[in-house]
Amino acid sequence: MKLRRSFVPRQLLFLLAAGLVTTGALPALTVRGQDTITLANGQTQQVQILGTTLSGVQIQTSQGVLVYPFRTVTQVAMEPPPEFKAAQAAYETGDLQVAVSNAEAVVKKFRGLPLEWARQAMLLLGDIYVGLNRLPDAKTTYADFQQAYPGAGGAEITVGLALIDLANKNFDAAKAKIEPILAQALKQRTPPKAAALLIGRAFFVSGQIKEASGDPQGALEDYLRTVAIFPEDRVAAAGAQEHADRLRKEHGIAVP
Image 1 (cartoon, helix red, strand yellow):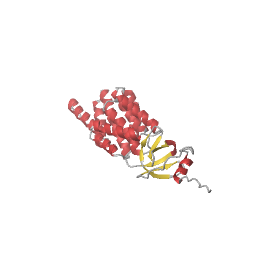
Image 2: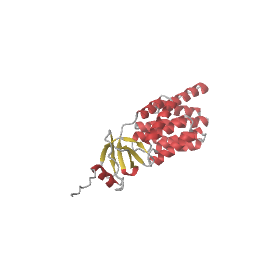
Image 3: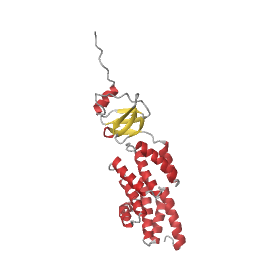
Image 4: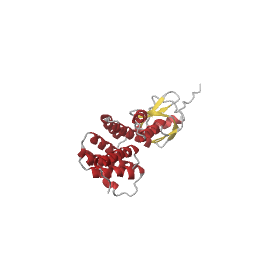
């Protein structure tokens, strides 16, 4: 009787080479979808990404769910979910309750996914928590971001932590965090949008520090820098405008 050779699909050979599975338990083939994932062995697959776990990226297979460990994934292409854009839009209009529910949904499902929108969702969630005065949640989210994305988001986290210091009336700590950002701002004529957003938020923090320390004139100038020069973060710009209007009314001051 002629024995038939066992057949191992090419897809599984790639998984074996990548160290994703062992020969003891071969997973089902991945389901072809609109997302793309590139593995450390150089293989690129078109897949359906379901989300992430603490250890890796979840992929739909024909018989269940397969998890690619983060260490084996070098690149991912996936459109952001509608909740991400909804969170951004709500944040920009100041609707923090809608923003937080959408941002939490994105972070819960896609934490650690190596994509810019996934990173931004975690940073945004921290900022929303600050705006809602949920400071312990904000601090935890920033720390979780640093664990999920080592080496990323340094300046964004710095401004977020400065806002937490400010809320806790730890003005010296907040000032120490934002001073390097403001010093760098003076050297840039036309910073990119991401940098301008951080600079605007930093000037908003600086204005509040100066206002608390009894320098309404300096505070007004910083608020108006956020409003007129660096308004990319609309929540910070709206807050700075509100503070500026109040200072003008209470102190009868204006920018020279």
